[in-house]
Image (cartoon, rainbow, N blue to C red; front, side, top):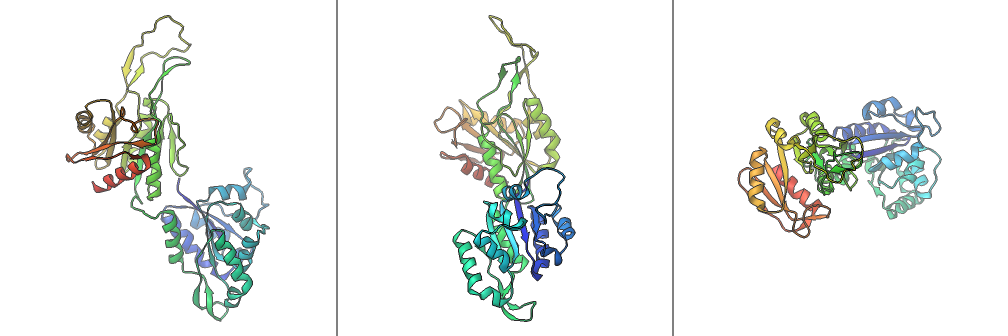
Length: 391
C-alpha cells in the first residue's frame, strides 16, 4: 500500500488544474482519493477524477453505498495528507469556522492528517479581511497554505488569487510526504519476526525475535519512497499500514511467501529469524508423557535459496550470534551468496532481540567491514539502506 493523499476539489474554475495534480501524485506512487463538492462537478466530472485516480470519487454524503462505511471518517483516517485544491473562499470559511455541511468539509474537519490548502478566487475576495482572517486561523492550527499567484484571473481581473501551479503543488506535497525519495521505484521484500513450528496442540518451537528490526526497515523504506512487501511471522510490533503485509506462521510458509514474491522485488532483506528445524511428526493432541523426545528435521534455508535465484537483485541477510561474530557472519555471507550481512552479538546489552536498539557490524561481499556503535533500530535501518544504495 502507498501513502494516501485525499484531494478535496471545490467549485472554482481552477478545478481543471487539479486533474494534473491527481495524475502526477498517482504517478509518483501515492494512493489518491478524491472528494468533489457538488459545485466542483460543474467544472470537472466525477468520471474524470475516477479515471485519473483509479479510485471511486465521493460527492454526496448520503449516496447509497455498496458496503457500510462511515465514509467521511474512513477517508479522514486513510489520509496521510489532505490536500484541498482549489480552495474557494467558501470552503476556507467553512474549515476556519468549523462548519461541516458536505462531504469535503466534514472529512476535512474529521481528519488528523497533514493539511494543505491552495486558495483560488477573485483578487477582491482573496484580499477581503474576512478571508485573510480565516486563512490566519487555519495557519495557526497548523494548516499549510500555498499562497496563490498574481496574474490574469478568469474573471478578467489582474491580481493575487490564481491557484498555485500544479507543479508547485505536487512538489510541495511530495516534499512533505517523501523528503528523501532515494528508494522511489524500488520494491524491497523484507522478512520479519519469528516463525513457529508446532509440536502438538499447545506447544511450539520458536525464538525471541520481535520483528522490530524488520518493521524499522519497512518504515524507513516507505519513508524514502520505496514499496515494501513485508513477510511477517510472529511479531510484537505492528507492521506499517502502507506496506503490503503477508502473514505467515512456519518457516515453510515464509519460504513460500518469499519465493512467490521474489520476482516483484529489487532488494531482499532477510531480517526475520526463521526456525531452523521443525518437528518431523506433529502431534494432534497435547502430549502428556513424562519424557519427550522430538525428531527434528531441517527447514528450508530461505536465504540460501534466494541467493541461488536472485540474479541481479540485492540480498541482505542478518546474523544473530553469541560467539565468533565476524567469522560466523563472514561464512554466512559467503554461503548465502548475499551482498551484505548485518551481524550482531545478541549477548551484548542493547543488542539483539526484544530491544529498540542494536549494535551491528556490517560486512560487504567485497570485504568491507563497518563496525557501528549502539543506535536505535530505526537509525540502523537507514544505515543499512544507505549501504544497499552504495552497492
